[in-house]
Image (spheres, rainbow over the protein chains, first blue to last red):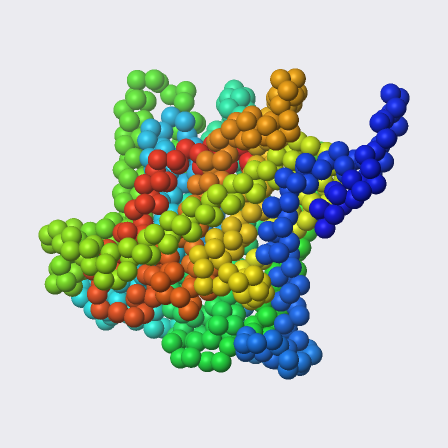
Length: 334
Length: 294
């Protein structure tokens, strides 16, 4: 699309040599002048249009068919798939599980990451880079590996976590960590916090480093204590970065898949099914090792519907943040 | 936290007692951070230790991360019998390919979006920003279809292209931010020296963006190495194309008794990425600090 736009002026000949007192050049001249820019943009835009933008609309087409993914879709069902999804209790449970996951993981994780970042940002603290590395490391571990290792640690054979907890009398009999839906969800949440905390730690540290040292010195001269400095200087100056961190954390949490798929596969009895595992099971068949017929149309409807929910949530989030920022800004100016 | 909070208030008290108290406070903080960090890393340390345990040792030693000996055979078994060797090479191809594709596409685009003017520039930036907020995981079905249409199903190319496409937007923004802070005079100087547009980019701007290339490359490499969803979907019917994370998952499903193999496989998956991260980690914070400011 961009390519043809860039090429068009070539057929109509090179634009006339501009007069010395040049008026604003016409749009095609500017397009021609920017031809190399389009060329450099082409790989990115091609990949984005084909693999990001088109699939959003492509999935919409599938939603109108009942289709098992083989051959081309023929059985037109109109809005039937959407009706089916809206009345599917497992879908709504999976939405609920995903939101529970996000609503616990994001605040807990950001709070820990922020506290750790404040401690590690202290310039006088020695080895702070070393500690940062320690707490960051789980991020570079593959969620699949983490899921497998956690399964081994929590399993009921040998001398594992359960027997240690019994030795220190926290529990009296082995807990079926991944067999009970509620406990399994808790395990997923704790592991989720552990695994992705490092990103937020690095984001917060980066945000803290944007605050110039002079501001702290000025605050010190004015006699502000640590707590006062934190509340009146660090927090307000961290807010723009902080909002971005919150949004990114929510986006990430709503897309949780790897950990759940590896740890529980959405089970037991769909007790930890999140939206992405639900869609995966619908689209590619096989829930908990039992092969089921894939239903691509229904999966597309579920994912499109969930996409709409998320866009709604994102808009809501931006509006809330904007109103907070406006109110704060007004208060500061007053 | 309380430890830190109290310090500034006490500044005016006589100087002589401060060092002792400060040293004690510092030591306590270091102790907390160190012990906390070790507990934090316990699952990984346990995996490392358990990968060297014997089968009996694995059961009897439980949570003790120290192995009962050095059973290196776990590794050769995982490498050969459990196919982790071929998974390893698949993963290198996927991660390397994804990094190259991402760096080329996003550095070029970031450069022209940040430093050149052309009609439609704002529209492109707008389109890219919108896709950042669209959830990308849920479009896998049409993507699967496109890959089938262009006959790349059951190839590692499919994994590379789809994996790269998922991280493009963020990387483009990082490059845009980086290029926009560079000195305007650079291009003028290059032009005076007779450099064409292409030479200006490939000989001057691209090499100068080294730190950002390292940052984006590192992020992309880690996420591609660890990727699970995309390689899982595109290797469902081709087990010999599995990457390490998918291989781990499949291995646990297929042979659910060889726990020491599993631990060795985990270490094979973890060690390369941890080493690369440790060598290049300064690019993380430095690169992000620059990007988050913009």
